[in-house]
Amino acid sequence: MELTWQRHEIKILDKELYVKNHMQISTNGLDTNAQRLHRDFITNLPHLSEVRNDHMAIVADIGSDIEAGISNNRSILSTEDLLNEFNGEMDGKGISLPIKIASSDDIIIQSRMENENQIVQIISAEINGGIFRSFIMPNGCEITGVSSGNGIIEILFL
Image (cartoon, rainbow, N blue to C red; front, side, top):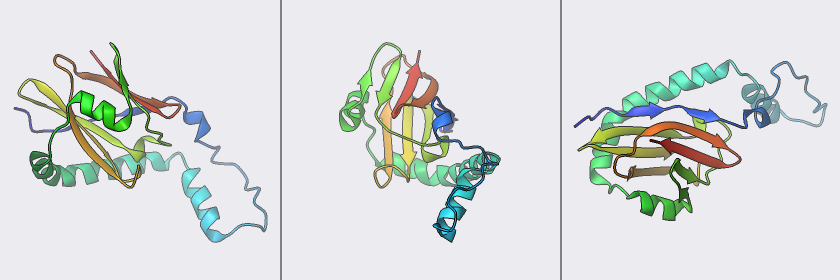
């Protein structure tokens, strides 16, 4: 039984909708405030994504022991229960969940093998006041990729 969680990178398909040119000059003029200027500055710097990713990796590593204890105490949903909860769908290629994210930092999707089944965790402090769900992949299926576009997270599997 493998107890190590493997984090799956989320490919943002409609990234151009969220990333602005970091050299863009503010058009706010005098009708703005420090909070808005700071938010625009932080969200418009593509080089901060590497720092954010490193930060998320450190937080995930520190929390993995705690999460392992929590996940042992929480029930693991079936794929069908997860689909019902999130109003998602499944086909031969993967699982579709209507969860809108602006960047890959908004959500963590990680998995581990347990008794020849892949257990998947979905973790986010940003979505719906925070979510933490674990579910078991369908028999014989393993995650091959995760993407997000048009408000849908796709968990692709073999």
